[in-house]
Image 1 (cartoon, helix red, strand yellow):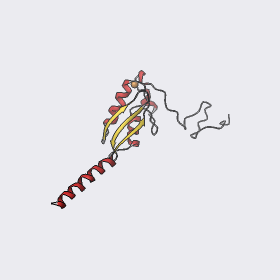
Image 2 (cartoon, rainbow, N blue to C red):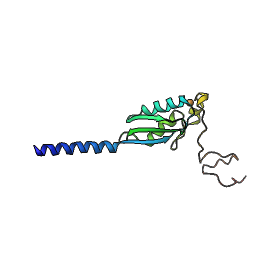
Image 3 (cartoon, helix red, strand yellow):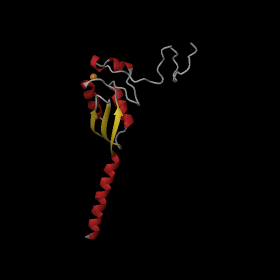
Image 4 (cartoon, rainbow, N blue to C red):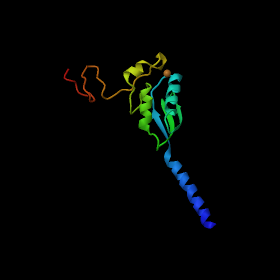
Length: 133
Ligand SMILES: [Cu+2]
């Protein structure tokens, strides 16, 4: 009887520890500008397998995501956000998807290191030099 009891305790602890390890809460930067963006971003993230909640904040542009780290991760979530038109730190939305967003959703795009600079250098690296121009 004593053995059964300690076995039960052990099983309970194992389950508790497993839960603590797999459910993560992470804040991800996702650029957007209005309530439509909020709905789009949250709906997109919640549709991902393993995500239990997503709450986007218009002021901070951060979305707090609760997810099972065995099923998904920040990189995969960021990729999905970018697919529907919102820049994240890891993935940028394509110009075509961004262009298709409603006018109210046009946010200021995230600056990328490899963007062509104003002098038309076209370098794929950060352009701190004069570009020979
Ligand atoms: Cu919007």
